[in-house]
Image (cartoon, rainbow, N blue to C red; front, side, top):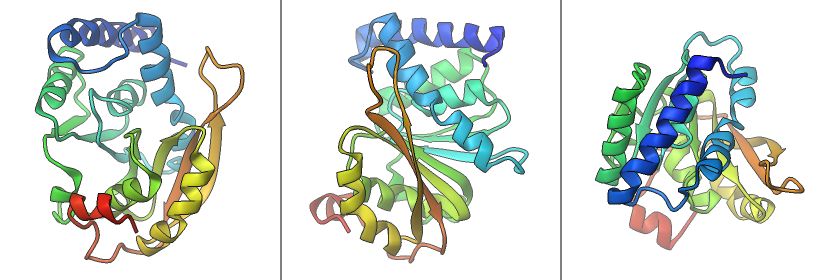
Length: 227
C-alpha cells in the first residue's frame, strides 16, 4: 500500500516521463493509464517477493540491469525507500532521464550507472555485491541470467519479469542458470488490470554458488551463443 507522498511521486514521475518522451523517445507507452499499469504496477509486482525474501535485511542492495527509463528500478526505489538501488543502463538519453527524475523526486536511495552490464560485472565494487538483481529487459532468460547473476552474492536472488513464453525460456535457460551458480526457486504469476487472466510472472532464481570468473562474456558472444 502506497502512502500519499509515494503516490504523489508516481504521479510526478508519470508527468515527467510523458513530457521528456516528446523529445527523447524514452518509451512507446505514453497514455497515463498505461504508464500506471505497464510501468508502475508491473514493476511493483516484485515488492512482496522482495519483502519476503529480504525480511531480515535492513537495507537490501538491488541492482537493475538494462533499466531503460527506470523500470523497475525507480518504481521500486519510490515504493521501498529502505532499499539501496543501483540502476544500470547503457543508453545515455535514458540514464539522463533517470538522473533528472531521481533529482526531482528526491530519491536519495538511487545510484545511476551509464555503462553496459558486462563491462562492470567484474568490478569488485559490483561483482557479487547485491542481495537482488532485477530486470524487465526484453531478452531471453539465458541471456539475462548471464548478465545479471554475476552481480548477486551467494544466497541472493535474481528476479526476471517474463510473459507468455516464460516456461519455454526456463527450459532453454536451465543449463545456463546452473553454470552461473543459480537455481530457479519460484515462479510468481500476476496480472495487470486490463488482463482477463494472468499471463505474466516473475521468475525467482537463487544464487547458490559463486559465478565462474569467465562470465559474463562480451555481449556479442552472449547474444550469438547463449549458454
